[in-house]
Length: 321
Image 1 (cartoon, rainbow, N blue to C red):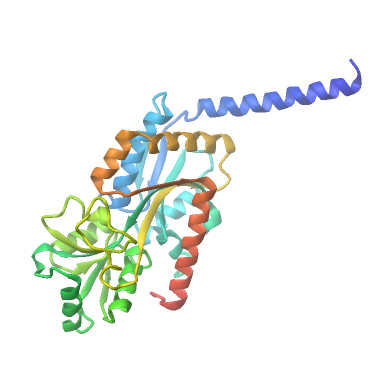
Image 2: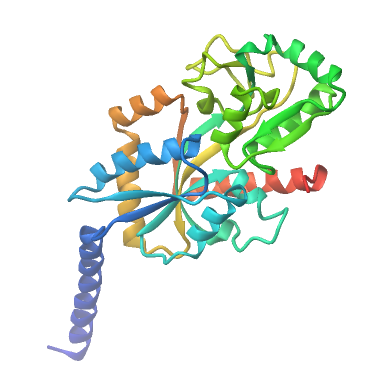
């Protein structure tokens, strides 16, 4: 064999070995439980989505795969987002990402992550915010809500899952559009904010729609901050229909630390695509009131960068600290 042919043969052998190795790594993944970090407390919209995805992801990964949800609440989600960003990029730590909230946290404080700290896997949900009040409040319309806010002379308490997230941005937008002042009351997650609202400790909320589902006997949704009415709530008007040009929601998806190996990324993306197309998964999400909006990889990164810009502009125009 000539030296040139020998070189080509060795190169081909090396290439095939690398491909085989990548295929083997993908075939073997996962070899141990995958931790799915949630930066919020149990019971909120992100937690519910995460647990639903985890159950179906185990099935799609197959071979007895285990996905363990780990709630790491605190600092408006920063603890969880930071833990995800700093984890080993081996595919055994993934986590939920909330936009624009995760990026907003990088403007109002020193954060040890940014949009480049993650491998963006898949957005799953686009959950619009709402204007919501306790069912027994006597308020049945946005017009009545505005009148009550003016009567309260800037003291109407608005329950938020955190400062600097989609709930907060929604409240800011509504206050500006309705020309009212409000008292923003942050909690440690959506579940606590909802409990405070149902208990009458705050007068209204701007929580995401899915976080109101199942609580119809205790909460009244006055409007959704979306560009069109929701299939899950066709009788609830949009804020735009009522004359308020505001739109805000929570994009919830999954990411991993940056520099995730290509074969592991491919395995996770393939499994997530299978999950998203599963009728049982779609039925579960519909029952929870979670509007699906699934995009993957580079498209998801583009969304993250756009939401990062939304957070930056809001911070510059209406700083919350």
